[in-house]
Each structure stands twice: as structure tokens, then as C-alpha cells.
Image (cartoon, rainbow, N blue to C red; front, side, top):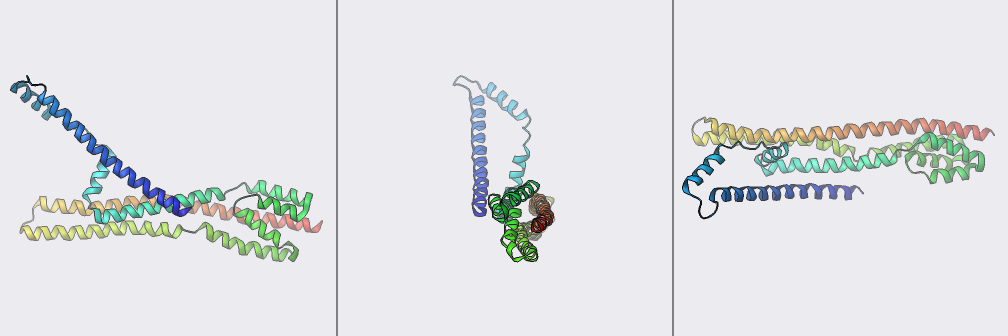
Length: 274
């Protein structure tokens, strides 16, 4: 499932990029055609009318660019090398984040209801009936209960050991892939800083080649250099938000597992005394 989500995320982003590029080309072509038609008109348009049309078009204010267009232009200006690597870090980081969020959401259940159902099953049908209840319930809490019920005949001490051991395994599954997200969070700004350093080196090379510190030469090189850092920081901020949300979900699930495991052992202890 993780590979499928990563592949779909990559395909969607690539498709969106090409569609925006195609739309931009179509828009420019349509706009150019409209300008030519407005200037040329039909065959009886006079030279004075053409001059007036050109002057009108020249004095018309340019349409403000949207944030998406500005972002795309700055991304292209930053260079395909490091900007492409930063984009890949964003794609893979988002793919893992989405997969973890889906997995953790499916792992969350109503543990209070499960405890009530298990207690009722123990009173009505014993251990076998309780096993059927936990088998029919998804999530790590039900799996932990199932391991405890399988060790019931060995004593409550063995049940508690099985719950603790399997709880560690379940916690590891919940945290699977989170380290990759933290890696991309650290990697994106570092790649941006590396692009900045390389861009500054190229700017100084341009100054040395020109033999003079020209504002035009320096400004272009520094702008391209700083764009990689900006996009690296943007990627890190986006992934950091997802990372913190995933960590909070894991902590809530682990706390829920610990509380429900204690309540489950109490239920088995009361059932054992009867």
C-alpha cells in the first residue's frame, strides 16, 4: 500500500506540472492571437487605427500573476538540478506521510467499546468467545488483546508479559517510516543551502569573468542562489507539519494501548476469580 500511494503521489504531481505547462502555453497562444487580430483587424484597417491599437495595448496594465504562477517561475529560475532534488524530497516525504496518516487512522478504534464487548463475551461464552470478538476487530489494540487471550491458560503473569512484548512490536509498526520523514525534513533545507553556496560561487565567477562588480551580474546570481534555500525551507516546513501530526497520532495510540491493556488485565483478573 505504501508503494502504491508513493507512485500515485508522484504521478499526480508530474501530471499537474505538465498540465499547468500546457495550459500556460495555450493561454499565451490565445492571448497572442487575440492581440494580432485586434491590431490587424480586417483588410480595410488603416495604419492610424493599427497605431492606436498598439498604443492602447502598450498602456494597458499587466494582469497580476497568481501565487501559483510566481511559485512556478521562481522554481524554474532556481535551476532544474537542486530544485528537482528538493521536489523529489517533497514528493517522497508527502507519500510516506499520507501512507502513515491512513494507516494510523485505520488503527484508531473505540477501545472503550472493545473492552465492554470483551467483558461481555467473557461472561457469556468465556475465552473462546472473547477471542472471536478481538479477531473481528481491526487495530493494534485488538491484536494485543488477542495475544493476551492466547496466553490465558499459562497464567495472568504470562498474559501480562505477552501484552508488553507484543505492544513493543505494535509500537514499532506504528513508527515505521517516520524516520524517513525526518530525514527529508533535514535534507531539503541542506540541499537548498548547498544550491545557495554553489550559486554564490557561480556569481563570483561571473564577477571575475566580467572584471567588474556589476549590480546586474551580482543580482542574477544571488537571486538564483537564494531561491534554492527558499524552496528547501518551504519543503521542510510542509513536511514538519505532517511529521508533528503523525507523531501526535502515534502518541495518542500508544497511550490508548497502555490504558486499555491495563483495563484488559483487570477484566481477565476479575474473570479468573469467578
